[in-house]
Image (cartoon, rainbow, N blue to C red; front, side):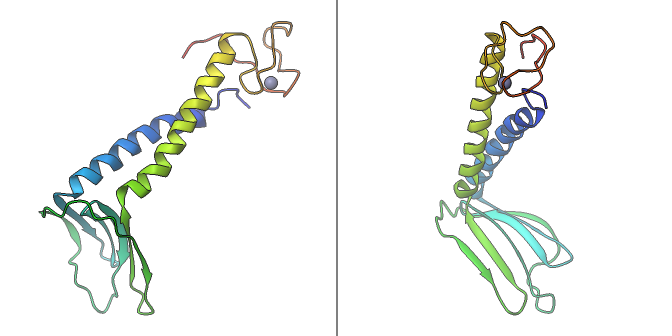
Length: 155
Ligand SMILES: [Zn+2]
């Protein structure tokens, strides 16, 4: 196992992009309604500061399949709804910040974890457990936790 897992770095950057995207959707959704409806009846979109998805009853459809955007100044709506009907209809929506917040928290934690690992690697400590590797031969695994020792790289 690498001491600076690629997954942490992937989460860092995917998290940043996703957070910015969700924030942009939130702001845009206060003025523009966006909707994408699929042939199967599933739809997803944003409106009034909310993001959501759902499924229409196949025998009673209102939304023609396709993608559409319309101007509607709906502002910020803080309602959430999670509804599944017997008819097979599904309706789920919630304010975009409620989706953004967990993504942003995970992203911040990934940045923090990676920063700590980087600092430890720089001062010659195991980036996973912090064990002092100054007496450990170059290329050997950490005697404390068994993590592979990273090459002395920055970045
Ligand atoms: Zn270690």
